[in-house]
Image (cartoon, rainbow, N blue to C red; front, side, top):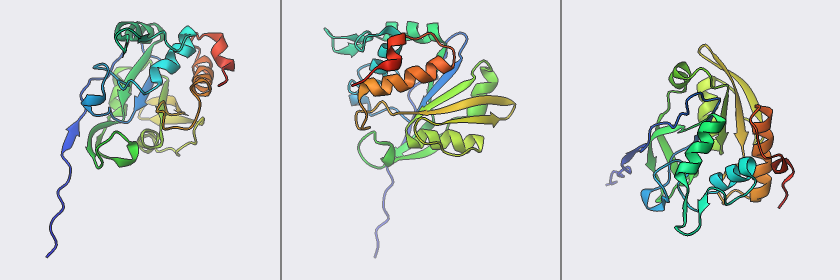
Length: 208
């Protein structure tokens, strides 16, 4: 007689969206890693995830500008100041998941509940661009907007309800993604510059 397989428990998203006063860009990951991997209680909390090093290179010209080396953690106050200054909001595409493996890999995340992106845009209509990194987060936004899944570096012009926005698929900030940090930063710099955000101009020509 076959035994019934027990599904992993459903895990709810731990944070509310981070939204500056006048958001222009919404960056969406998939779901946070397990709590023991957090270096701070905020988005992209893993010490070995390079999102905040990418953002530091793009906007501040120094990969470690948002890192506190003495305490080996990210500078959350400086991160929030940067996001507020640039009008960058943060959220994730999954509100509830099951971890099919004991890790944060998108490949083994079963999304139980997605975000209500249209409601987010209703509340914050100044958002004109949505940015995802990774296939799963990109696929969620594409499905919500009835659009195709773009390759990395691609952009869709989407309509969702009464909202029009550009959807960019960018390189993953995970170190498992096989691209040098400087090349990732150059790709993000080009994208942010195309949206009219002020960047460190050297970041457009970064090489490994």
